[in-house]
Amino acid sequence: MLAAIAGAGLAVPAVVPVPPPVPVAEPAVVVSCPYLSLPAIPPTPATPPRDPAAPVPGGAQLGTPGLAVPPGVPAPPALSAVSWVVADLDTGAVLGACAAHLRRRPASVQKLLLAETALPELDPDLVVEATAEDLALPAHSSAVGLLVGGRYPVSTLWYGLLLESGNDAANALARVAGGDGGVPATLAAMNAEAQRLGATDTHAVTPSGLDAPDQYTSAYDLALIARADFARTDFVRYDTALRIQWPAQPPRDPRGFQIQNENKLLVSYPGALGGKTGFTDQARHTYVGAAQRGGRRLVVTLMGAETVPARGWQQGAKLLDWGFGLPATASVGHLVTPAEVSQQRDSPAPRPAATGPARAVPAATGTAGGRLRLAAAAGGAGTALLVFAVAVATVRRGRRRRALRRAR
Image (cartoon, rainbow, N blue to C red; front, top):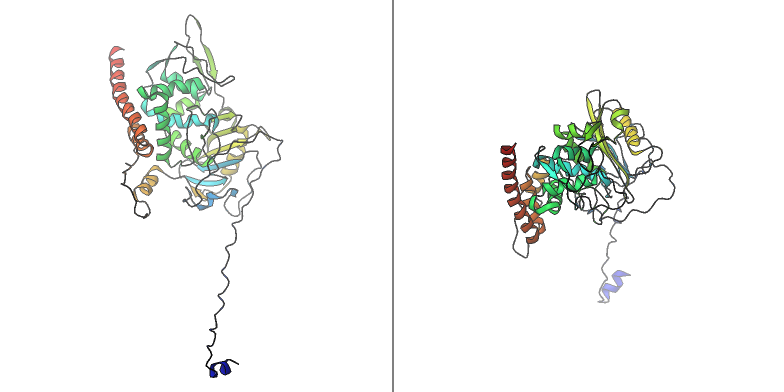
């Protein structure tokens, strides 16, 4: 037929090959976390999702919204927590996780980021006078009991923050640490510190962890922050005290009172190293705890838990038992280090040429000044003015500290 058509001087239609079928990538299998059946609970407000195209901090396995555990290991315990991480404080290995990068409200475990940020900046002997602003808290908020006009050493406020989870103590510490910039300056430093640590799922809006729009963190980020905290001897000293005597404030409080550590892991779990509890209506129960056994130090973080099958710290203890039962080589990822984060930031992937003038962003440093400079570069001129004010305040605060020392 084709020859006849050609002989008649007609054009022969070209034979178009049929392309082979394009293979369709199989969707990743998401293994559900071992949840418990729960009664209806209030819905959690939405938080910004991670950029799915961005690299997953700690390794690709931690990007799953489900369970990530090494092959062949015993199943982790069934919990009510929505997300959790078990990691090695020393090696940084993540032994297992459930929705590690899911962003949720932090509740009072936010105070761990405040401690990591402000502990290096505050003289523990500095005496702070409490203000009405420090005590401006919602009804039924957790408070250690500051009195307006009361005078408290910074060291005492740290005990009130970590033992009693005092939101009034959080406000006072953040206000003083921020110098003339006050609480907003400390929040800027907290967010810069989170970025320095690689906690890219974290955004702080309140220093205490009280619910606020656009405030979130993840179980993975909490492990990063806890690892930095537990490397500080002053944090461990404050965090592991079982009880202290709160100072009297005569005439309104002539005797003072005793406060006790709310983290029951310390007195109930062999080898406990410390941690922090948290609860708000939106966050539900959150928990960070650490323990040592057989030469290993593990940290557990969990978010969105209920008081079934047990309280938050008890669910954390179950995960610690599971983690200590795994081989030391077990891993599904790792906790990034500030050096690793800095290297990635200083060596970005090639990008298309920008249409406007480039703006240099300085690398984060280990100082509050460096963290605030990073925040200023990211936030624009308004934040830069705030950072300038904070820098001036830092110099003035140093002068005040020296004056206080000379006066003592």
